[in-house]
Image 1: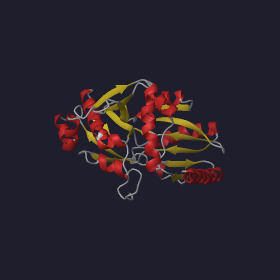
Image 2: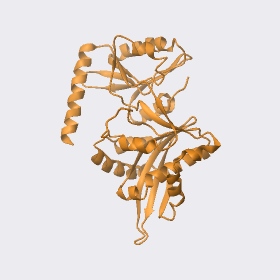
Image 3: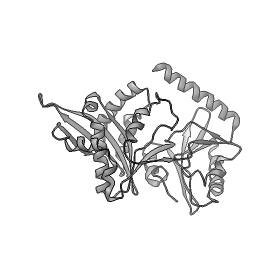
Length: 312
């Protein structure tokens, strides 16, 4: 049974540091981390990339446990994101299970860096840019200082305004950086004429098991001209390889049939220039216990999304 980072005790600690109520259960048949989420109508339980199912009977046993927990917490519904769609079919076929908007990416792009020839899977132009980074005045450093997250949030906020996408609050990202599995990368550019330094790109990665997850990243216009994100991505892969990791997960791509104006279209095109492969998960589903409250919850959810769009 493969356990994603979001279903481990490490992720539970992160959620607890964020002030969330969590419930963790581990058996030979299933493992789950459930996060209690409050709403105006009541609570629901969210299992990011969970439950994890080790046997065919794991889905039934996990459901029995989750039902008891839902009853104790008077939960309106349970939001699940099983990565293993095959073993999760019992849950997905339940009459009270409904497809929801995907929260964690349903599709992701993955690069196998376990082989010695992994460097050949990196686009040659990015390898050239990486070799010439120093001559361009670029310097890549790493940080575990939560105060340095300000460089990433500044870049992300500017990008969010351009792409009309949501970003995480600075407090959330600071808490992420405090975790043992996270590292912040910064790309500093020193202009040749003024010798002034500026952070033109940044990225936050998570290392767990044999995988590096490339979760958060952004660059400014200057960084784009200098191919900073491409250079940084090469460094992230090289460092992961040196660390003995086997998989580099680019963390999320747009669906195959997505429109050209999809918010992730540009990111997806960039990620697919690497000679990797696509991994598909089941997606996000809601197992409903209180139908009337769930309908009201969905109405409020749509109204809140509309308000955010109007504000933007």
